[in-house]
Image 1 (cartoon, helix red, strand yellow):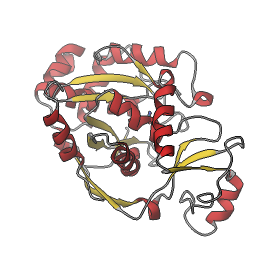
Image 2 (cartoon, rainbow, N blue to C red):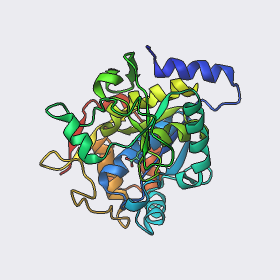
Image 3 (tube, protein in one colour):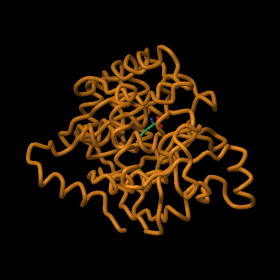
Image 4 (cartoon, rainbow, N blue to C red):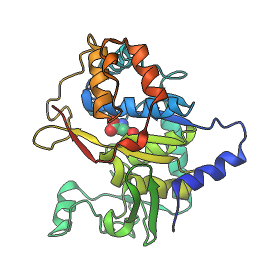
Length: 313
Ligand code: GLU
């Protein structure tokens, strides 16, 4: 199976003349406040959408309830607003779309594309042996585990090769059955897995351009695979570099990245534009948030970002 994300989108757009030319999104998980790395991604996707006269939607990826932190979604809204990153329409919360995920899960199950899996974490580690952990060997494919037993739901992968063109990283090719194995759509704790939710959400929100961090680059073929199975158009994808610390680790809650200081948005915005390789003019150091964004939208060059990692100073 070969695909080109952008051509799939073009076909879809041509079929629907009401479809705006560009609908992008930012989809943070409310597991911690925005740090400079997540704001960098938000800014890149915002600028790319606005420079293309597009819409920019906001989604809160709040399905992983044990990891959600109370009050964080509000802190994210406040942070985006203080940086002038205003989104279009209301906020889409994944937790309000459980019925949609279940509906598409039922559809895949009725086509025998999924199966129940009761492998424990321990079994999975033992099964992996010397192989790379994470590639599921299909142990439960033909076990016909009862619905009443505690189980995860996996999608069957096959030997087809998925190829897509990333806006910055070029051609990405992956053979899911060898590199990922049958992956999880619904976890054993009943939580819908990220891979599956994101595909349904992007479809329901009409997203046709995804700009996000490079940490999700290798996940994208799984999403394209699901889109193809469900007959959804694939968005165009652009994976921007990650901001890493001096040790090369992605800034995250685990690496104790500090929350962005919303009291100094101009200074931080200016620095982010430098990190985004947009060469902001020196005189913009005194500009306010709106002037900075206006300049950045008009002069946006998405192709300036060639790397996969940028070290935070
Ligand atoms: N919620 C995901 C994250 O915070 C991003 C999802 C996406 O952009 O597809 O890493």
